Length: 463
Image (cartoon, rainbow, N blue to C red; front, side):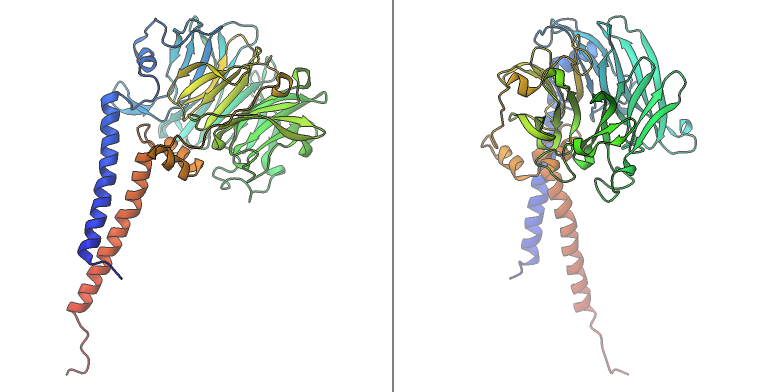
């Protein structure tokens, strides 16, 4: 039996008011607690005022963090701009270096032979006057900076049209002159000579993958978010992370795709689910193995090469982990993890316990200085006999039960697309409003149509 119109309106009004109250309450709380930018308030404040006292726990060697922040702050003209940062924590916990000059920061790597110099990948959104006829474009580039002196060098950059799925998220150094680049815009990996500007090698995903697979073609098909120069059986190769295909592929520089080495498959979310930043561990360090931030599964996993196939050898997660996007095995056997939606960078020891943590708003990648590019001295989980750990499914709270009821991709989508103060509850409130308001409009439209019909009968046969 249909409800009376007055009752239906009252119920819809209650739903709208409750949802709006949740959003207003979340926003007011964020304003009062300075929670527009996530992260430890003391750390975030130190970023702004240059505080020199320790703000995180001490740890041997420095830790450098690149953030992909979707928070917004006011620029010098009070206009909103994206807040992204490159920061280095000193061994004693002080902020040793800080900058926020670029729209986004992605990959960051220590420079071989130096103590405090890193190369990082950045993206800057440009306006129409700089885009050669395009309405918007992105400068993707690599810079080198000395974290002690601030001296910086432009290494290489190019402009791509658009600004969302057009960026380079990772670049790996092949040698002194050449870089291996993950090119999301063109679904390829390529090697460029930074001296000549010439592309010396290229692998196009279309040569080996069907365009019906992965993400929407051509808008964001493969989302190649990571590359690593590796050596397989004495031959140069590229390890390539195809995020939207749930796969890590290996491509021989001369022979092409190594099918038998591919880790994961499209839609096999038990193995990988839209992963980020895999690191290759060679045989001399207990591999071949691949350590991966399994992002949509909110865990860190490692796969060991056994008899020509990949076997999962280690899994780690906790209750807070949400959309991890980087993990490096350190030379001491510990694992450095970057948890984007968990707003933290932390270190796990060989017993699986967190021994150091820094709360930073929306980090993308982190590196421990003095351990080499992607912590080149770390051994495999199998060699170290690391214990696995998984998180409890829920903490029993209302928020926990709501989180468990939603797909991980929905939760991570809310965290990425909406302002940082919009959590799971606020995100649900937004979805409720998006459903309720159109439904209310349909109810009123149908009612007005019926009323019009009743008030204006069709009269036949009258002359």
